Amino acid sequence: MTISDENTYCGECPIFKHEDADGYGFCNLSHREQRCDDICSFLTFDFDMTREQTVKVLHLAQKWRRGSKQKMLPPRLFGLAIDNAIRELRKINNSSK
Image (cartoon, rainbow, N blue to C red):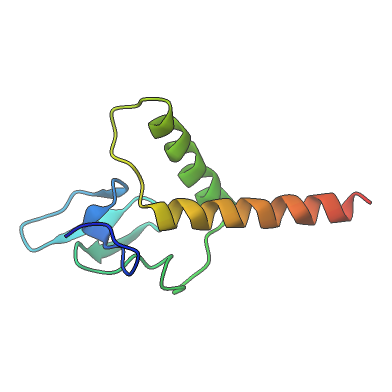
């Protein structure tokens, strides 16, 4: 499986941990049990990313960008976190006017 523009599978994501022989593992972002061949639940809009999850994704992406020895996050997940962060910053900016 490779990261594509169409689908991002849990097994491709470095946040997916503790995969067993049957393909079940744990998403450290959603705190849910997933299968490695499940499509990322954030990208299928099963539920929204919280502020804490947004910060975690941005933090992991920044660590990777600065040379950490981890895999790159799926670009669509990183893009979703950026979109959420911009939305939150706009709310703060609009409320301070």
